[in-house]
Structure formats: C-alpha cells, structure tokens
Figure (cartoon, one colour):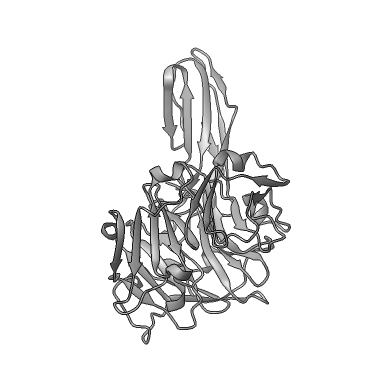
Length: 403
C-alpha cells in the first residue's frame, strides 16, 4: 500500500476487508501479508493535530477491490487530499446571508480579519456540518427552502452552489435551529409551530439537487424550541424561549423513534439565585457538561453531568455562570480542540474564551473579557451567528467529529 497526499506525521487510516471475514485497519503505507483472494480497501478520513481546529483529509484507494494471487504482490495506491472546509472557523453573517470562513493560522491572536471565503449561502442561521464536511444552513427568507446543503468542495470556491434544497412539509415559516443525531438524521426546530422535525439520513441522501419537499417521520411537540444539541447517549436537549425562559429540556433517545406530544423526560430551570436565566443556544464540552447561552442576560452557564441526569423538573442555580459585556450578542458557540469556546460577541465581532475563563461566577458589572477578540474586516458585516468548525474535536458528542 502506497500512500500520498498526507503531511508528515499524519497517518492514513485504511480499512482492509477480505475472505473469511478478514478485517484490519492500516495506519501507514506498508506491505501486508494476506491469503490469496479479493480484498476491498476503504480509506477513512484522518486529521492532523492542532490546538484549535484540525485539518482533515479524505482519500481513495485504487484499485479496490483488488485481487491478490497466490505467491504474488499486489500494489494499491491510496491518495489523500484536504477536505476544504476543515481547518477553519465558520460563522454566519446575517447582514448579507453569507457564511464566513477564517483559517486557523489567523486565529492565534485577536485583531481584524478578512474572511476567506465570504460565501453567499442564502442563509446564515443554524450552521451544521455533516461527517463529510458539507455545510447545512437554514434558508434566509420564507421564499427560500428551509434547508440548504453546500458541498465542502464548492463552499470554498468562487461560486458556492447548494446540492440540496429541502422544504419541510407543512412548515410555512422559518426554522430556528438544526442538529444531527448520532445516526446522521437531521432534526430541525421551528418556534413558529412549536415543533421539532426529524429527517432521516436516507431522506437527505435521496433528496437530489432540485428543490424537494420532505415529510418528517417523527415530530416532537415542544413549547418554543430554540436550539438543539445531542449528548453522548443520543438524547436530545433543547433550549426553550418565550414563556419558558430559562428552561432546558431533554427527550430521551428511546423517545425519538415516534412522534410525541407529551412532557420532556428532564427539565432544568436555571436562575442566578434571584431571577430566571433564559435558555437559548446549547453546546456540550468534552467533559459532558452542557453549556447554555442566556441571550438576554449576556451570560453562559453550565450544567454538570450529575445535574443533567435523572428525570422530572428541577430548579437550580448553576455553579458556573460567565457574564460577558453588556453589548454581547450571544447567537452561538462552539468548543475547539483546546477546550476554548468560540462565541459571537459584540456587533461585527467574535471571540474565544480560554478554558480558564470558563469557571466560577463573575457579576454582570465585572464582565469576563475574552482572551481573543476579532473584528470581521468585510464591509457590511453587522452580526455574526452560529460559530462552527469542521471537524469537531473527538471528545465532543457531535456527528461531524473525527477520532
């Protein structure tokens, strides 16, 4: 096996299967002694190491399948290439319905950055990556499809073109959030209908490039669902807004196989000890803690695994509450490889909170100043939204993580 296209120190990951149930994963170019027969080689995605965002690579083996004859040697070439959306931080820009990319090499210190690319994606809300590095985004207006998918290869090019344009049957307003579950099904929240819809992996794959209407096989009735996140066990968590400010709810994995209109399996009501904190965006860290953005309070707070466990409704005061600048516009967050947290910040700015800044309790009058603050240099940018990076760190319960 001869491997090309990977930088020094980045190992190939090639699955070899053959006669009699033979299966082995190779991590480098090498010679493998096997019995005669037909063998199939599948190059799996791999990635380098980096303190913020990894660069991922995908490959292909040729020829595959390949025939190994008795007493002979067969050569197989495995060629890798970078996945274009990896190694960047991505942000939605709602001032122009575009998606902005920022190369990891420019994120070591704060300052003014010009995005590369600045992609016109017809929407800037709810950015989510699938396992192949394709970007899913919510449509920007009611005239748009509810969902667009932009292939990784075109998103960084001069003319990004979606290859999926999907409407949800019965939904006549804009969705509010989306997230993939561990099996690759896509869940879409809509505050206007008080529902969360599931589109299966098979539906997404078969949608084609034309505008397509899909019917959700599973629908959850949820009061004012804002944003979604799945934990390591495949349970669905939602932040609920409006009349349910400060309510974070869980629907257990076993509950997600059929439509459901009953109460959640777990409900957490957060307060600062005096008044309720709202619940907006969600993200899990590598330790299994759930972080919640309180948009109206300009704050982040944390639920521990012990607090997340169990059933029923619980009111509590989170032991970690991080208050940011009163001008902060908290529209999303994403953890990086080093455990830092990327957040949307003030107008035309985004920021990174260092791991050491994600502890304890400060006061609104003494806000935490992120260790790195960036200003978007592109003209017309007003508010950034939904930070996302590909691939997700291996320790996070996200569908697009890599080992």
